[in-house]
Length: 227
Image (cartoon, rainbow, N blue to C red):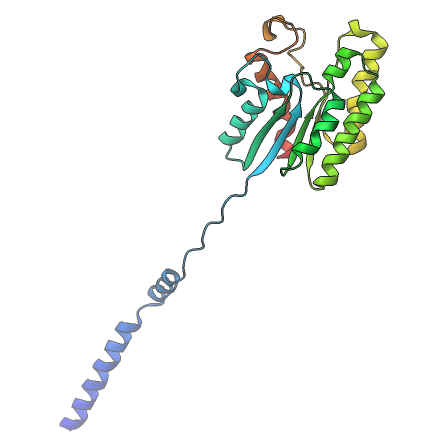
């Protein structure tokens, strides 16, 4: 009898100790979760936005940080979006000059292109069909190099003083290109700035810092949906 009781108590304590070591289902689950290594965070891949234009993009007469592409970068950063702005604005650039220059710029990856050219063509009285052909060539080159690129086209207008018929032909070029190529379209980049003396520098053509803020707003209204 004594031997039997000793065996019973020994077995009982062995089972009890075994149960304590196993732990509850919750404890087991926690232990398993802790043993699984945390997934390493993948580095954020930055995409590029190429602003390709003339003095309006370059921010003529202003600090680089005051040009509307730089203001767009600030907006992007505030929203933690993975995009880096590249300002490729060149004062005096025409659509023909842009067609020649774009090849060099395409050596770097381009995810989004904001195309702002044509204003100098209008001021020089270049025939609208020529401007249209040059801009189409730029669009074709960018798409050929980067088929997945997204393009935003900035529309431009010129004063009626250049001739009513010419101004009308010039204006429609940009909308036709946007429709033909299915591009995001800014109807008139200088909306709210053109003709406003307080928003333009002494030459009456180039926006002040305040004017550039409006250009950034006009651009962002369209660009935000692209991003």
